[in-house]
Amino acid sequence: MSDCVIQTDELCKAYGPQKALDRVSVKVGPGAIGLLGPNGAGKTTLMKCLLQLQPMTSGKAWLLGREVGTEGREIRKRVGFTPEMDCHIPGMAGCEYVTYCAQLSGLPFRAARQRAHEMLDFVGMGQERYRRIDTYSTGMKQRLKLAQSIVHDPEVLFLDEPTNGLDPKGRVQILELVQDLWKLHGISVVLSSHLLHDVDQICDQVIIIARGRLIVHDTLSNLKSRRRGWAEVVLTRGQTDLVAACQREGWPCEILPNGHVKVEHHAENLGPLLALIRTQQLTLLEIIPSPNALEEFFVQALETAHASP
Amino acid sequence: MPLHNAGYQHWKGEHRGIWYRRMTIAANGLNGCLRNKWMRHLVVVCWTGALLQIGLLFVVGQLLVKDSAVVRWTGSLNSQLQLFAGGLTSWLEQHPEISVRCAQNLLFYYYTTALLGLSFAAIAMVIPHLVSRDLSSNAIVIYSSKAVSRLDYLIGKCGTVFGLLVLTWLGPLLASWFIGNLLAPRWHFFWHARVALVHVLLFSLTTMAILSLMALGVSAISPREKASVGLWLALWLLGGTFVNLAQHGRPWLKHLSLSYNLDQLALAIFRLGRDLNLARDNIPVFGSMLDGLKSHTVERLQHPDWMGAAIALVILLILAAAVLIWRVKPQ
Image (cartoon, rainbow over all chains, first blue to last red; front, top):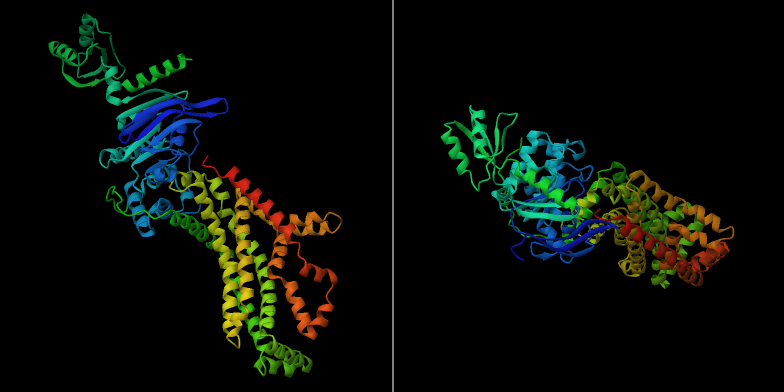
């Protein structure tokens, strides 16, 4: 259990007759974990149950090896949370707010103030940290939420839709920061999102939830390998030649609107496809194995969930 | 652009304990209140009251000493007043315990209850900084995601009210007691005034605990700040109406007034009736003065309805606790 960041055993959460979480059992190791599911799937509820923001109806859960419900304070000291909604304290300046959050986690005032400034630097906030939070834009508030969630140096960070309302540049920056937290600093990240691209970009494990049930939990590479046999080929020219050659091999293929050729080669690896391209003497610019694998897997998983009673 | 991005660093220091986190919540709330200039003015008014009380204690202390400057000065104003002061002086000589105790007990009763009104006003200003604002801004989620429980949060918020009441009420009371007795003509005033101090501490600390919980409960009723302030003012000011209504047939109605209940508690703790009897028995001039008091005033002082007040306060506290349990949740 100690190797697991998150473990749940038959975890249930019900709102009256409505089951938000239905017997969720999962063991999750350290890493960047994507929590995927459509709106209302139970992603946020799962996070909140783990953080004790909502009581569980039944079942058990452990976070960082400690049982949720009995060691709340001790767990939350080691965990960070970036909620989806705005939840700042009105009237405070950004740096004051982050300092206060650090103090709430037990950091002495001086250390809290210094670390608050470091974290605000880390998330890319400048002089605006001295302004009242009420005047912040959505992007600034998202950065501030991230800063307050890491100011006490957590071991696990829960992010609930952290890129909501951000422009493309801001989204990329936030995702890069989150990625760095795991890859460079070893802080496990649980990223809840309905944006598959975000999860695909930074996560190495994926949990898919639908209708309160766990549909799949696996590494992203394993999930992609399940969808092996697809590839997107980018050529300088000769797309029609490749299509003809693939059809002769019996591989379904098509030319996409962007000029790429999508090939279903049915093989475990790209060897046969590369050999075919070589024999056709085509100039290969790029080959993307299993493009949109996560999206396809996600849709397939949801269909399975909806089909089951 | 960041000011200076040194990247992410792990924190290696020691974490402080739970009481530090609770005090952080309390200090943050108090800091927020004191940013309001009206609150700062109110604090100044309360401390000005303390100066007046010190002056009063000084004058009373001087009245109890033979040939003091104040006695001589009263003699220059009015010969009867000098006679009265002379009586007091001889009373002090004979019963120092009773004279200092009774005088200070009476003075501190009035001063304590007078400052209570200002404390109600101070709480009206602090109410938005308690739970209302956190409810409206969803800040409760942030507290709940940190290493503090709901109880820690409430203790911290209670600490905000407590801290404010120390500034506006207990602080001036203790300062006036200490400095007033420091300026007294004899050192034994400190010893004889101990009963007044015990009464002040007992009443103010009990009332501070009651008011803190009541204020939290009222603040948690609505996420709208104006509604919370309005409710508090209603609870405070409409109490007088209930007391008036109670005179017309339904005596229990007076217990709906928080001020009335606290006043009964004050009378029970300060035991003014006992002091009046002592004064009446020992000083003839006081006896004739007290005979002039209306019977219902004497009855009120000697037999406060503390049991009814205590029951009413307990019910109000239970209601406040129920509101807090119902409203202060992470979600």
